[in-house]
Image (cartoon, rainbow, N blue to C red; front, side, top):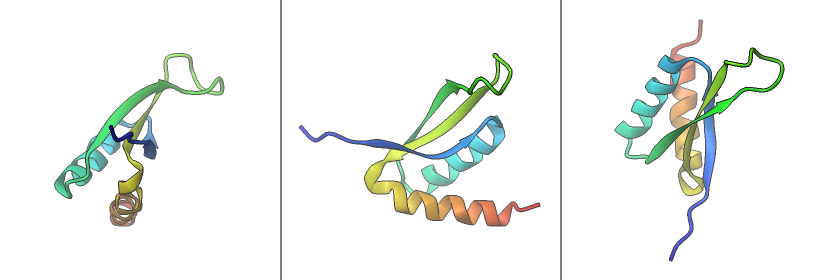
Length: 75
């Protein structure tokens, strides 16, 4: 049985950003999931951060896709 290691490739507390990254990864065939965690003590108690997780083997390709998206969406 093969074990997979999941790693976080993108974090945000903005749901729309997470969904856009998730969609880009899906389009490229990179399996991903979103984890929802409470943020650190420096934020409000109800604030959460979302993490896009991918298999470790897909991390380099995921970062390329995310870097491209970030460059396209610089403000």
